[in-house]
Image (cartoon, rainbow, N blue to C red; front, side, top):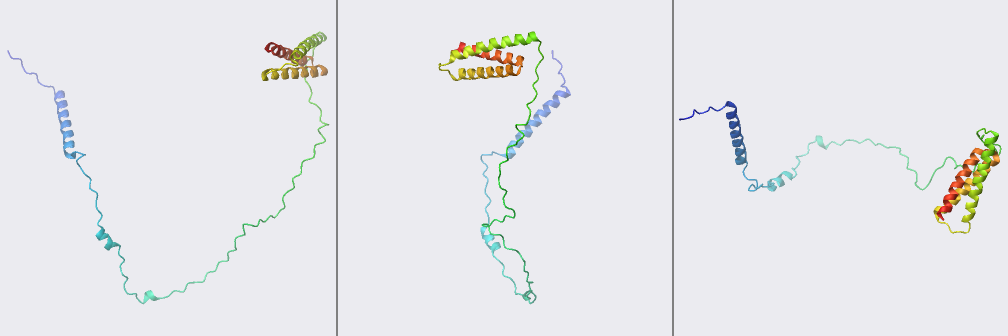
Length: 199
């Protein structure tokens, strides 16, 4: 028995037609353009023989009487001053003399800025004095241990900082700022202990 032939859908036939027409179009473009390697582009030659004739000047015709007229040119004179000589320099004002400013006499008269100190009770002051003295004695003893020894740059820096904190603690204690004196003395103690441990 024979099977009935299925009819093609209109969508399938339109796709097939599009493929065929695209293939024909591509093949016609290739056929019309030819092979690119075989084409030789000829350089256009310039006709030099005709160029020589075009470049030749043409003789002028006979001068007419109107062209022989002479015109008077007006005599123009401009008054332009000559430029100044580059070697001379004109100064209208003499240069200002440089004088150093005299030192101010108000430097000694200026009062010191006020110090802000926390108010401590008598007990707190006594405790701060004792802590300051203990820390300063430890720091000074540790600095004395380093005397006569060769120190590397980091140890020299630590020793310098310890001395500056000791000085700051003594100045603060002299003024009566025991809080700052205790803080500076404690810093000096800690740094001096670090210095001794690095020896």
